Image 1: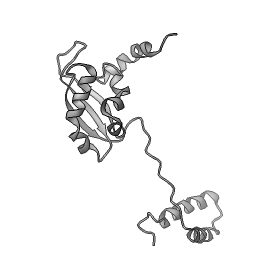
Image 2: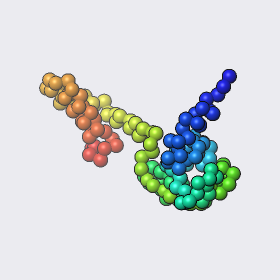
Image 3: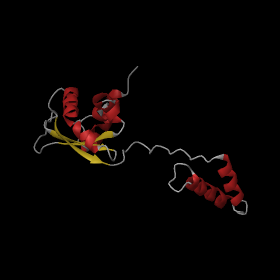
Image 4: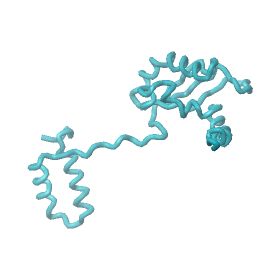
Length: 158
């Protein structure tokens, strides 16, 4: 039985090289390299190599990491450890610096927000106000709006 790992590397080598990744290992092994805590809110974006290096074992690259907004400073404090772990992973000094950008992570959907819940008396009062609305879609939209405004987490709730 043959594994797909060898074929996968051959197929994706050109695509990953375009973004500075000689192998997909850095992307696929990111949680193992930096730890699950950092991997939850960061991801490697690309590696920028110094000009004039054409050999396979490029050295002194700049790793560009994307972090979720508000976590860039936390990630900056971890850069020496990240550089050390990546260079240990590759077995040579592949990365010499890290650049951090902030933004939404590419492969992840935003976490779903929980629907707010109203107290039973508030829900009944809202339903009684919406009885006169005939259109079901409009009624449901107004119910969601009213629930959001009256929910305990809302600053307008009284």
